Length: 144
Image 1 (cartoon, rainbow, N blue to C red):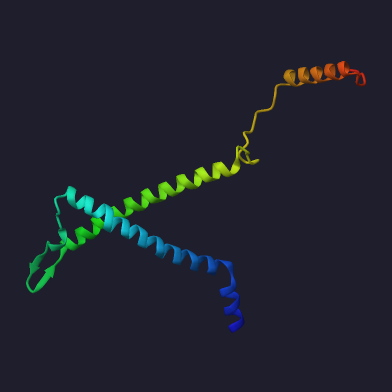
Image 2 (image 1 turned 60 degrees about the vertical axis):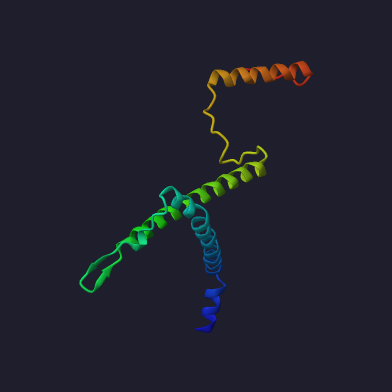
C-alpha cells in the first residue's frame, strides 16, 4: 500500500494540481488586494461611501443581516470584474509573446489550406517549367 501511495504522489497530475493550488492561492491574494485596495475605494467614492453590511431586519430575537449578503454580492461582482480584466491582460500579453516567438513562421496547422489549382493552370505551369529547362540547355522533353 505504501508503494502505491508513492506511485500516486509521484504522478505528474498530482504535482501539477499541487502547483496549481499554490499558484491559485497566491493569485487570489493579488486579486483580493486589487479589489480591496484599488477598485473598492473607487467604487465606494462613486456610491458615496454606502456600506450595505449594516442593513438588517430584526425578527423576534433573530437578526437577519441581508446587508452583508448584498455587500458580498457586490464584492463578488467587483472581484469577478477584476479577475476578468487581469486574465484579459494576461492573455493579450501571452498572445503577443507567442507572436514574437514565432517570428512570422507558421506551423503546418496554421498554414492556409489552398484549394487545388484548376487543370489548365497546372498544365500551363508545366509548359512554363519545360520551356525554362529548354532555355537553360537542359534535356529536351517530349510533351504529349
